[in-house]
Each structure stands twice: as C-alpha cells, then as structure tokens.
Length: 239
Image 1 (cartoon, rainbow, N blue to C red):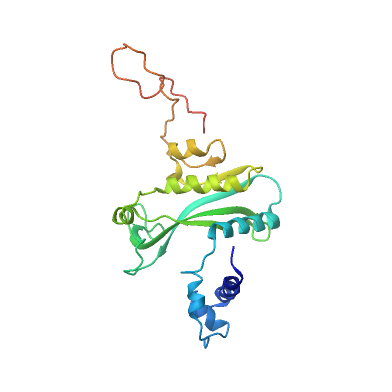
Image 2 (cartoon, helix red, strand yellow):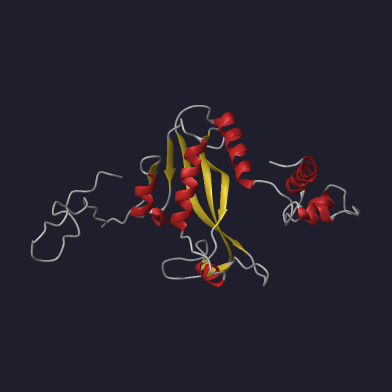
C-alpha cells in the first residue's frame, strides 16, 4: 500500500489523528506527537496530496482485518449510505449543495455545502454494546452533477457508485454471501438488476409500490401501442 518512506510518515499521521483533540488536521497530528518544530513538515502534508498509495488496497486490507477479528465465517452483511462532509472553500471544486438530512424534516428543508461521500460499512452485532455497529471500510467521493458539467465529465449517480462498490466487494469476497442493506435511495431497478446475481440487496420501497414482470415482446402487425408491463399484477419475484 505504501512505499517505505511514505509509510513512516503515514504511521505517524495515523497515531496523531487518533490522539489529536478537536480537528484532525496534519498540523494538529504533528503537534500532539511533539513534532511542532519539525523542519520538514511538508513531507507529512504530501502524504495526502502528492504521495503515491492506493486507498482501494487499504480498504481491502481493512476489510480483511475486520472479518478476521469479528466474522471469520458466514454471510457478510454490509450497509451503504451517504454522508455530507461540510466544507467551504473556493479550491474545493468537488463540493456541492445537498440536502442536510440531519437538520431537515418533512416540513423544513435545509441545504448545506460540502463533499458527498458514499460509505460501505460492515454491520456487526456488538454484544457488549447491545446493538449493531456499522464499521466503514470503503468510502467513495461522489461529486455533484454541477462539478461534472464544469469539468466536462460524465456524471455518475449515487446508484452508479453503489453498483461499482458492491461489485468490487464481491470480487474481494468471491466465496462469501454478501447481503447489502440500503435506504430508499437505492431502490432503483437498474441497480438491483446489475447486482442481483452477486449480492442480496435489501432496500425499502414505497408502501404503494407495484412491481410487474416485463412486458412480452410485441406481436408483429398487432394494432395499438406496445404494452409496458404484464397484465398480471403480482409482485415481481426477481428481487
């Protein structure tokens, strides 16, 4: 994951981030480790900006350690959800304006500026805590549609990122059953169809949702418009 010089600096930054009170900045990490007088402090900043290391490989290693410690066998249950990191600044070009789910309600809509992250979390029951804990191991930045337009790039929706993350998880765990749990944001037919042969996906639909089998092929020469769904109104058994 790291080269030897970068690993030395990354290890110190990790220890400093754990011990630092308040904001976990590079400066705070160095100060709490007694390195406030370090003359080559720029090397620690470069770990997060210029150094070459693979965050995806780090997620793979972290997942392996979590499974070895808590879930050596059996189905792997993961949760997927988004979180907003509130950030301001002209140089943070991937930030956007999103709904603040923590402050909003059905009658009150609150927006916030920041970075939108999608996290894949291992769901494990902790006996000593009396509840299920969500331990994140893979987090992906999902830029806004406005940023994609300004950068002239193809915008990827939340469901596109979720599909890639779940399929990557299955590549890491080809012999384990993977069960994913998400909210109604992931109740999208295209996403469910893309991962159904690899992952068991549990999500919440509307109470009035109606799922149908695909419409049959149009008979040549038959008058009228093409059917969009089966006439039988039984729920679709595919998902």
